[in-house]
Length: 467
Image 1 (cartoon, rainbow, N blue to C red):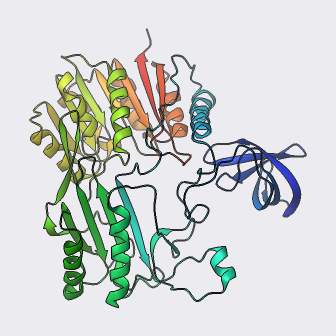
Image 2 (image 1 turned 45 degrees about the vertical axis):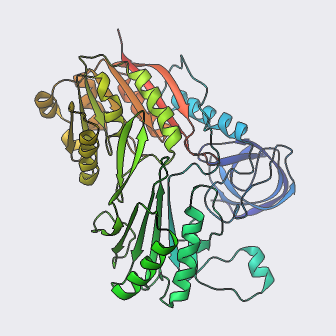
Image 3 (image 1 turned 90 degrees about the vertical axis):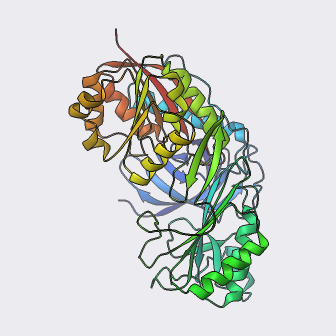
């Protein structure tokens, strides 16, 4: 590696994958954090990591701002780790996401692109999320402006972890990600937690009382609140939750967990349902979906509906078709497609999610679904197919890591007529498509923007057997 060096003035020329931007200097490509810059910016740059094929740079100052920039709408922009593209016009965001998808499919997956759709933008670019999780901390992050003021500031915070700092939390005063009562609920818990005298959590020594706060909402106006406490002080818990009910009597579901572990995950903990129902209910085309405190549900509800409609269009399910829905989660896609199929088989790793999927079938009167829990790489094999039938259509929506190679190999063996591959990571999707290209060709591609003002993009690919 070369030594660090500074470049007094260099232009940011383009976007790159994973939220980065590019500058070029003496034939060298330099990657820069895209949350700090925009193509057209002229900046002073510290080149900190120089490798054989590329370098990484850190922006020291912006000498001249790009004319393509727009004013960020959130006061936390630049400090909070979310919504990192607020300074980029939404039309430009969409164009870059679309370009990223098609570049990765053709470059990594060697996909011959045909029947490509323009990216489907989100109608809502603010207040589009149905779930947020906030963290209590006794070691808040101080912004550069706050440090420069030398004012004495409270060290307790309720907000989001700043990037790359598990121990530092930025206090959030207004978040544009979730609408409804979300901001008011968060502010209530911050103020009441402070007034209680009980300590905010210390993420270094793992001690304290108030730990995390989860808020979920639905398009039907329902509200779920889950508070995570690190101590089982029943008097203190009852005090703050009773005060919350006086302030927010219409809450649909109020619960808490006691977590004394070293991590914040609740999947191995038992929630205590304090008030109301243990779930909230979302609706889509007349179907009802129950969402529990541990349930996965697409965080952009309105855009999820658009994505599912596109999946249905690509699947071209016929009434006698057997459909496999891999990585089914709480069975949202499986139940959404069931009315057009003979039977739908869903497979998911997380057992509570499978229980939710079964309940969602029951409450909607859907009788042609079956759900299995287990590791996809172990569950989906030739014996499973022999017992449950050879699928005519497969829907697959894996996590960011993509599908295990063994899953791809099983799909090649059973050779369904059609595969619809939904991905939140076009890079790993492209890798899997190259494996599947042994028997399949890409019929259509449709990128979908689920997360405005971020570099993340969802993509749907329709695959058909080669003739």
